Image (tube, rainbow, N blue to C red):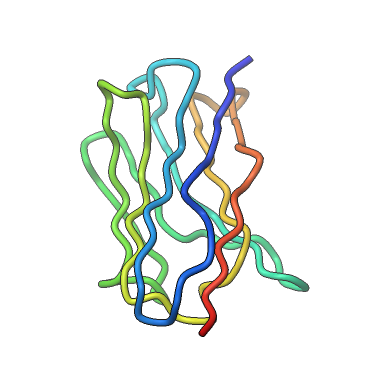
Length: 116
């Protein structure tokens, strides 16, 4: 069973930055797709950013130009650099890894709160 462990969440002021990490218990090069999702209270979980094999990335319109997804294969870790944070970015952030249709893994989530 693969484990994904997120870290790096916390409280940030509007305009501030946070860097989330998602550490995997096996080589992340084995995952065709890795991504970050978020869920705010009373809302559905939504895609934030995704990283595909071949260094292809995709971002939700709401975070384009502010967030950057990256992978470090040597550390088996995926990152989400979040800049110019807004209060509406407040949510629990989850990482997801997909190796195949039958191998889909989620982390436990990390809280991000953006408030003055």
